[in-house]
Length: 305
Length: 324
Image (tube, rainbow over all chains, first blue to last red):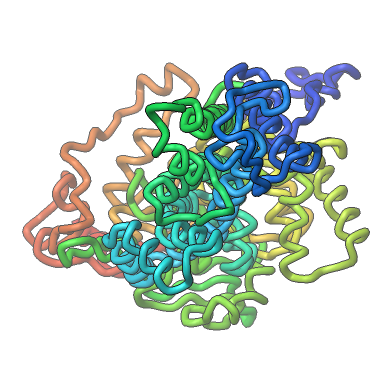
C-alpha cells in the first residue's frame, strides 16, 4: 500500500459525478403499500364491497320511504316485491330498511370496538414492551388474568349492570379483546427496541416517550392496521351472536343478529327472513377479512414490492 | 500535560446477569484514556466485548462497576436526564447501516432529529444545517426527502455519520462502522472520518476487527480478549512489535497484499476455542490457547504492567523488563 503513485489516479468525468443520483421516484411507505393493495384483486373487491355497505348503511335509510319501526298490518310476511325488495316481516315492517339500519348498528359496534382495542392495546402493549423487566412482567400477568375469564361472562355482567344497550354491548366486547392487540404490539416493540435505530435515538438523547411513539410504534403500523381490520368483523360477529341469543340489543332497535333472532320463529315458513341478515353478516365479514389479508401483504416490509 | 484527557475509563466492568443466576463478564476491569483529536482503535475477535464497551461508555448499558470520566467529569452514575447535555458531545456510528436508520423517517428527518430533541435553532436554521451536513458527507441536497431503503450501504453509513455530526460532538464511538460494507466503500468511509477529524479535531473510539484498518486510522490501539484489555499502546508499536501472545497471533493473521511477503511470513495458528464468558477460567483468559502458558498463568490473573512505553497484561512481562 506504500507505492501509490499519482498516475494511478484520474479526475472524475462529468457524468461520473452524478453517480450518487437516484433515478427512481421517491415513494413513502404508505404510497408503496397502497399500490400493492390496489394490485390485489381480492382485497380491492373487499374494499369496494365495504364502501358500498357503509354508504348504504349511512344513506339508505334516509332515502327509503319506510322507517325501521313503522308497521303495516295489512302486509305481514309479504314476499319480495318492487315496493318491499326483501319483503316484510311478521309485523309488516320492510326488511330491507331494517337490514340497512342493522348495518348501522353492526358496523358501529365493530368500528367502536376496534378503535377502543387500537388505543388501549397499542398504548398498553407498547409501554409494556418498551419498559420491559418487572413492569412488563406485571403488566402481562394482569392481561393474563383478564384473559382467563371468559369474554361471555364480562358481557353478561355488564348487561346486568348497565342494561341491554348498544353501549354495553360495545364495552362488553371491547373489555377483553384489546388483549390480542396489546400482545402483538408488545412483541413487536420488544424486538424493535433492540434494533440499532432505537439505540441511535437513545444516544442522541430522545426521551422514552419519543422513542416509543416516534420510532418504535411507527414501525408497527402495518401489524396494527391489519389487526384492527380483522378485529372489526370479530366484533360484528360477537354482537350478532349475542343478539341472536337474545342478550344483545333489544327491540325496536335492530342489529343483524337481532333480525335473525326475530325471524327464527318463522324459519320453517319464511326461511328467507332469516337468510337476509345472515347474508349481510357473511358478506361484510368476508369483505373485512379480504381487506385485512390484503393489507397484511401490502404492509409487510418483507413482501416483495 | 495539564489538560485532562477527553475520555478516561477506570476499571470499567459490565456484567450481564443471565437466567439461572449466572453472569456474563462482557467487559472486565478495562482502563483506558483517549486524548483530544486522537483515535483509539479497539480490536479483538467477535464476542470479546468491544461493542459492549462502546455502548457502556455511551450509557446505552449501565456500567456495573468502575468509572467513566468525560472531560474529567464522572458520568458513570448520571441519570438519563442528567446525561442530556453530555449527549450533545458524545455520539455513536453504528455497525449495521441497514438497521441504524429508522425506515419510516426521511433522510432530512433523521439528520434534523438531534437538533429537535436538544431544541437547537429555528426550523429554517435546522434545514440549512441539514443541507450543510448532507454535503459534508458527500450526498446530494435532493436526497433529503428520500427514505433510507433507497440508499446503498455506504450511502446509509454516510447518513449515519451526518446524524452524529449534527450536534458537533467532540467524541464519537465508531462501532465497526465499516465491517458491513464493501472493501471499496470502506476506504471512502475511512477517508470521510479522517477528513472530519482533521477539520474538527474530533476524537474517535474506533472498534473493528481488521487490524490493518485500525492501524491505519488509530493513534493508539487497545487489544481485547474475552472482555479483558490485554495490550494497550501506540498504534505503530503494537502493529510492528506486538508483545502479548494474543496480539502476536492477531497480527500474524492479518493478510498482506504482497503474495511473496505473505508466503515468507510465519503465521501463528491458535489452537482451541475462546472460553465461555459465562464461566471464565480463573487465571489469564488466554492461557488455554497460549503457547507460553505456565502454571502461574492458569492460576492467577496477570495485572496490566508498563513495558517499553505501553501496557500489557501478561506474566511474560514484569514492569519494565521481559521475564522470559
